[in-house]
Length: 112
Length: 237
Image 1 (tube, chains in turn green, cyan):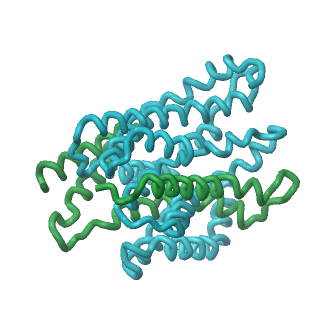
Image 2: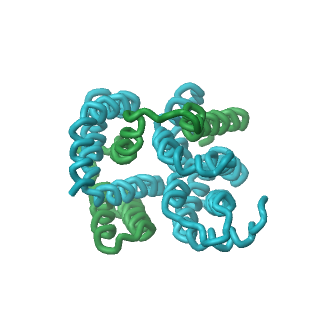
């Protein structure tokens, strides 16, 4: 099912690497050590990580359809399990592994 | 690099153990999925070495079956990794204390490494920069090794990988829950959730990411005054 040639894949990796480097280095390029950081930037630095993780959760679940079977049930059950596990043990790996195994099990057996 | 390098490694290693377990699981799953798309262990190695951004690497799996479009790959990477900008902004001050921070410290600043930069303290007599460099290098090593191993396993054995991509969803749900405990930050979290859901309904699953980022920025900037007032109030009490 390979759609990309090796050359395209190499270019794909290079593009991702370049964009990632930009996101990591840009603040240090814009604000060298002698330059003051504006209040709005500091404020966004504090609040944006919280908003962005919500965005990423929604992004991951964007393909879920409530109308068509399985009506988002595997996703809902697995996310609920993560919420319960995380509230109970507060162990990142346990919550990720528990939720993922639950989802894989549901997708591969119950809702095949 | 510097003197006391070994001491710095010994001091850094225990801090990275949670990352080692997490990256083993996420990395193996990534390598297996990439192999299922027809790209074996060397591709996993190259991606983890040069990109080293787990969430984007997972996102990219979904793009492999589509025609290659460098511009949208570039924009999507900027969007998915936009949070790094804010990690960078948060690290501006701390890294200024090192006279000339090694560029690798910034290159390898993934979510987990960033949180260790913030929390881990080096013991007396260990060079701060050497300590941080080891944290970054160990974390990347775990990720590269696990994803390459996953690539090897995935090219030898055939798996039913249906549902494996949920690892990424689980990761973000857990990050979100961890942040949700942080009561004063529930408003930005809800702003993110609301803006993104709204844009998903308005623009559809293909095109909502960039408008959602824009809307989040606008909403957060509008909320700046009340949120900063609230924060000052909490600091004072």
